[in-house]
Length: 252
Length: 210
Image (cartoon, rainbow over all chains, first blue to last red):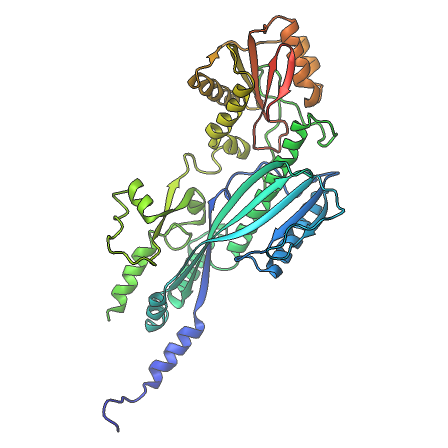
């Protein structure tokens, strides 16, 4: 036996491999700014009847062209389900917006930015050294900047939706959260699984619908309701009187 | 290496993370409003919680802090539309009164009313607008012009395009407003909105502000 070398502990190596391979990821989503704002619009009803909407998903450093295509496709479905006629456009990186024959009432432009990325090598080393009992935590903070304009370029609405994803890798965190989900937490509070994706999609698509609806109403008001764009809503009282209108439908 | 101790330390650090997990529920996390601040800015705002920037910090070292504050009222305590409007009331009413003020810089008396289905929220909107105008040196009246029941009955059947314009004409023809009065109306035009619109009535003519 050579000086300084030690026999390989096969049992230790085996348990390390089992734990490393058996480890899971727990991803948590946390809305930061605007994403958790309450909604009055229901994205499942016809909110954009007779409206033509052009959706432009601009690729950038944080949004690959293929992801921009996917985002635009999902938004097309979202607004088509709300009775709008939708066109999508994914401009090439660093290229100006192309001319299109589609005369849109609303032009929605989306850009993504990465605000913060947290990932520590030391944390990963500790994670593996501890047989993944200590979790390795990776964090992404992003902003989705949305602007809505009319066909002449007049700004009707803008917002920056910001959120955060925290991904924890390790057997300890996965098993602990799995147990808590199984025994303690109600189903709507479960942390493991794809709840984070559902929560984010619900927030994001809801806020985009609300912003587009605000833009539509702002256009109608600024044009003094010239075009019969919006069906007459249940009227609010003109003079102070007891409340008459029904409460808005809560978004599911 | 004392791995259990390190694990305990890391777990303790996780308690400070506002993301949902072992220490925070998804509901609790949604009721926080968080923004990321630069280290120096975070120390300036929260000197007790954030230590000062080290004088010999590495130039390439990026240090920042995620600052979270609980919402004034948890989500779900109020109707979604009321919550959305009231949580941004100061900013939205500030913008609208500023725009309205700019359209009427003269020496006029302002009358304010809010048209919102929930009377308690309508009062809050109206008071916020009056306060904003008053803080900017405007003459504000507590009187709200009241139309007769017959007028209200007719107006309530008109679409918003006509309703406010006709009401404005009636205010003027009934001498509820004079040439030296300006009426600022704040309203939600559609029940699916969480934003306020505003219009002004002067000399019997209605004009949308936003």
